[in-house]
Image 1 (cartoon, rainbow, N blue to C red):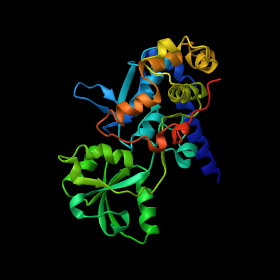
Image 2 (image 1 turned 90 degrees about the vertical axis):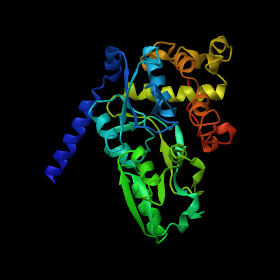
Image 3 (image 1 turned 45 degrees about the vertical axis):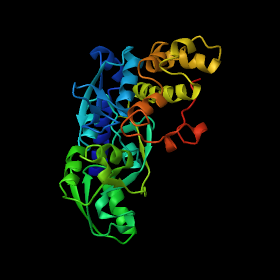
Length: 333
């Protein structure tokens, strides 16, 4: 009993130490934000042939850099596998994890981490080759399934097949690229991950139309940025960076009209544009810089995963709350 208590206190002490309660000062001193992202997931975080990182998750980190340093380009990206990501954050190797990561009780309460919000509401789905003629997950009994290790998809998959009295063979890989290669080579009949990830990985096939994403979604996967516990100042900055982007879309403030909107007589837009910085230990241009340099949430969504991207994912539940979706941010006041 005493040994268990000691280990628990020791673990808590480690998390407290790594948080250092001074990430903001560390970032300012370094001159850049250290951001953990996926190894390569189109639409969320992937580097182009020139090494420039782009994606919905990437934009969160760029937004934080704009808020803190006044420059959205001041980010050092660290590509991490699912198994590496939490250790990298706990150890202080990165300042923020923005890597299509699901918010769960275990992760929130047991790993010394804080989720700063949701930037994409997702759910686990399945992709199969069209030539198999399968139109439902309930027809996957006995299938070999490609899956990425260290993710929530492993438990979801086990629970779903057990609940439906089906069997499967799991073929596990460390990265998304390895998983899609396993699917392409025929090592598995099915690939499972978050549905947004399936649309992204399908683009890596020689003929994306040769595979179909099945209609069923078997889980809730609220994805969002993560920070260490023990540093509320940094937690608030990351949280309100995302909130500012969502609120900006709701108010119609974009990267293209932000200079004009700064002159608005609307009190809510005025608060969005400035005057709240001291509450976050930032200057008053923090939110203006985010919108000007990165854009609002809708701009980021459309460019990276929506109509303006190869994925062409519909907004769906990720539409604003007043446009038929559930995307909603607390007010800036």
